[in-house]
Length: 251
Image 1 (cartoon, rainbow, N blue to C red):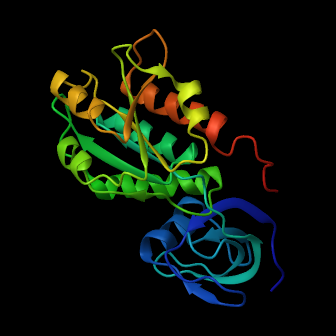
Image 2 (cartoon, rainbow, N blue to C red; image 1 turned 90 degrees about the vertical axis):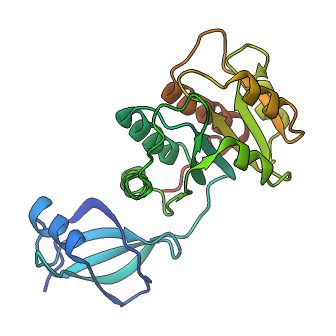
């Protein structure tokens, strides 16, 4: 069978990937390949599993219930993003979807919903967040998928925190130092960014955060940002000052 033109499609596959191996896709992935993308046998796509890197694969069997890929060659080696987590208070459904998607695109290594006093959406759907993280990783060419942690209360998060990791919380009261200054000063430090809910942190929560020796208040300027904007802005500033935005893009 002659190989057809390569597609720009990337698939996350939770299975080992090695040269010459045949990989059977589940019903959901097979449906996507067959009915959504309408690919044919012999076409080429890229696959990754978050452990072995990215591989070019040939569709050797295309069927709506069970398709098969043959691994041809490795296109990218396994790499890790800088060590920054995004912690956020869930907001309205579409806005929370935006936060998860942008956290993946902006290189967060872990994502964790945090329940605060003013959190308006306390019914988090972890399975949905995980699926969104996979889809975003496929689209932005990450070779790994960030871990999505179960939701946790702010009190429990702080009481069990690993003090080796610096926690930067976005302080809308204006008492934090500029984000660029704080992140530059902590370059190379394992980090986490915490964004509060639409109503902000309660006075009691701000007191808890300020009394935690591993936490530091950060300001994103004089304007009050929406929660989803603050999450994307904070991660962007961190990547620009302490992350991998200054590295050469892998071809």
